[in-house]
Length: 572
Image (cartoon, rainbow, N blue to C red; front, top):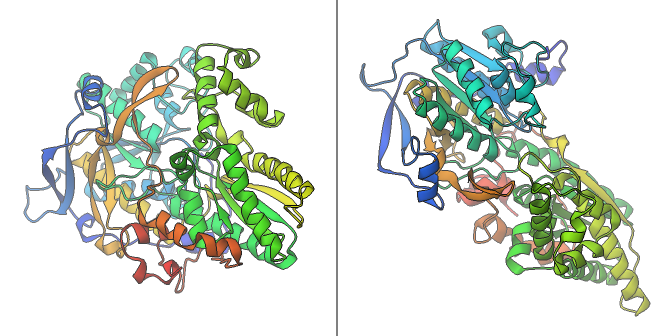
């Protein structure tokens, strides 16, 4: 844990911000269960076999209790909380909302924060979170209240436990599960809140199943976190927290670069944005800033576009702009784009399988199929090297280390040189590459994320107070004012399917990709040609906490839920 010693004027002002609370969450709540059980997104029989104790639960909604005895018990609660995976703006407010809920319910309630992510639960490294500590972190960015530094002492012997995993962001092995169970039993926890993305919430489901199968009283609830925006569901999870803030931060930077490009008029800027498996950030930032070219991974996959196709598409716009004397522009692409290209996707799948079987990077190239070997040899040496780097904890290539923007600069430069020699290109091409990643993870949360996360924390507390396990906290109706938001819970298994991980089929929460039939993507299509030809760049500026722009919701949410008319930002 790091201590906030000095803060800026703006940080101090944000510490005083009090998120609005819906009437439902201001007092005691009652639980309304939907009549029908839920299933899963796919392979329900297999998932039920793996998670029989938590599968098939109904969706639930929280409502204000109308009569005494019809509400949660509000006896003292002992709750643990874990910040899991990469940072996202608003995590501290989830903890603040959770703390305020349990503290208001009973003065003897306790909130324990496990240090350093899931491994803090395994090790039994925790702190008691109290009011003075929470007061230092309200509406602040980062996860450092409990996530920055792992304590060096341990209440259980962890030598063998830590040796089982290169990274401590998942609880998977029997020893880790048992250690977590012992810690929860020793602390007599009524509930555990896992704040994380799709993999962390998959882990929450596994913990809920394990605890329930061993008759542990500790219930488990997840909270949807990821800046990538790929943890959502039509069943009630409209967006993951951190997405709004990250997109605002990236859009400011893109807007600044676009203004610079339009001023100097001599560079193409290829900007790679976060989003390993989904292109939501790239799409939102495109709607915010109006670049000349936007590559959407899901579109590439649907159209089965090859590297050659994409290179020609980029060159077409560059050549046409050069005819108008415009040798500059802005190109946006998601970090995971390369995995959507069919031939590269096959190559990466083969590499993942070969490396999961213990083959070293030195020999995997020799074991590729002839088709994939040809693709591998075609790629620049730097990209080949990046494809062979150590895998992430799930056995997948670390796409954030693949400099896709440089790959396309290389391919476009080569193709334009060929066209110039044939008299097909008479302009000039100078390019600069950028990657916006960690810049967007820990900024001061936007008003939306501050309010949303606080509501998620209170919702998670209420779900545990009602004795639920294996659920994800849900706050919906997000394009309305916060006072009109609705709270409830969605079974984690309702978000699941079976996927291949480390050479095995396992139940996981499916990532929500960009829907090519939905309004945000269609809005991009509607403006794509116009933006390619002209300079319609838009600079949204920095995040606004006060004034007319401070209450705006990201364009993706506005368009998805038909609220574009309510906000001038969406008037494209």
